Length: 357
Ligand code: AOF
Ligand code: ZN
Image 1 (cartoon, helix red, strand yellow):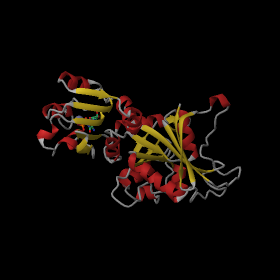
Image 2 (image 1 turned 45 degrees about the horizontal axis):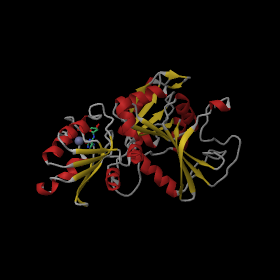
Image 3 (image 1 turned 135 degrees about the horizontal axis):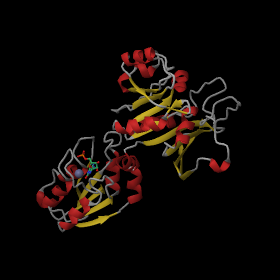
Image 4 (image 1 turned 135 degrees about the vertical axis):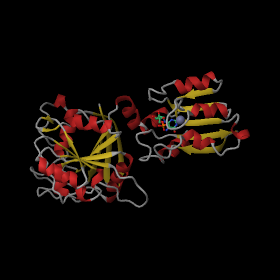
C-alpha cells in the first residue's frame, strides 16, 4: 500500500479534479504489476497495474489499491469488471470512494463476486492525500489553501513594501510544487500591483500552470501586469459592478476572463468566487495573499487549510503589512483556530500546516 501511495502521488496536478490513485498487484509476496491514474481522462490505476501482466499470473493475485475500485461507467469501463474478469483473488483498499456514484458499490460488487476485500489499510494517509478530491466530490466546492510567507514577526513586506524575498529558495520552490498540485491560485489586486507576480510554475521539467484568479473589486489591475501579458487565457479577474466597464472590456480583449461578482462588505464576494470556480471544474485553490484577501477568505469561512512559511528574519515597523490584515477579529474567543498542526523545516524556514477547525 505504501508503494501504491507513492505511485498515486505521481499523478499530483495532472489528475484533478479526479483523485490520485495508485495500485500494486502482488503474487506470492512479489510485485508483478503496478500503475497509477496518470492524468484526467486517462485509464484508472487498476487498469494500468493489471494490463500487461500475463493472465495466469493475475489470476489468484492480490490487488492493493489506494481507492475503492469504481463500479460506474465513467470515461472508462468500471474497474471492478476487470478485477472480476481477470480472477483476482483479493483486493486491499486504502479508502472507500466518496464519489456518490461509487461509495461502497465497488466493494459490494467485488464481494458479491466472491472476491476477498479488506478496507482501510493506511487510511489516514490515503485520505489526506486525497483531501482535495474528498471535499470537491461531496460539496462541488474547491478545497482552499491559504498560503502565507512571513518573517518571524509576521511581516510580509517592509515598511516600504519591499517583499523580495521573505523566505528562502527552498520554500519558494515548495510553493511552486503546491501551485502544480492545485488547480488555481488566487491573489488580491494589491499584490498584483505591488509585486507584479507571474503566478506560474518555474521549475525544470513539464508542469501544468494553474488558473490565476485576481480579486479586483474596482478593476484596478494595470494592463502591463504580467498576469495579463503572460498566458492571459489562464487569468480570471473577479470583479464587481464598481469596476469601469471600458476597462473590463480592455482586459477581455487582452485575453483574460471577467467574472462579475456580487459585493460583500464592499468587496468581491469570495463565497461566490469559490462557488463559481467549483462549477467550472476547479477542485482546489491556493490563496497567496495579500493580507486583505487573506482576512476576507478566513472571515468568509472559505479556507480549509493554512500553509505558513516563517523565515528567521525580523522586520518590525508598525505600518509594515502582516500576513493577515483586514479589520481583524475583536475578541480572543473569536480567533480562527487551526488544528492537526504539522511542522517542517524547509531550508532555513519553518513550514507550518494546519487545518481550520
Ligand atoms: C478507480 N481508479 O484510478 C480512479 C478512480 O471520469 P472517470 O471515468 O475517470 O472516473 C472518475 C471517477 O472515478 C472519480 O470521480 C472517482 O470516483 C473514480 N476514480 N477510480 O477505480 C482510479 N481515478
Ligand atoms: Zn476505476
